[in-house]
Image (cartoon, rainbow, N blue to C red; front, side, top):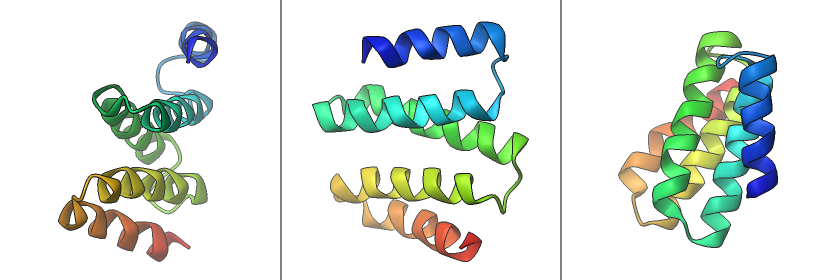
Length: 95
């Protein structure tokens, strides 16, 4: 996690807080935190990565579909199927 956190800090400084590459780093750190059991730390990172993707890449971009799917999987793993289902559906619709 420290290396991802460092990459995110550098990305914010050099690319700006809304850059698509920063969203990728946030998504990757969220997945790592999920794997480590830090669900509270992962949730806002998934949400931020999606927000950046929607804003910078648009609602139909394949990278956004990946982030939606990752967040849906995070929610599903917690038994939050009703919250996960629309995210899966959006990801599938994007293709």
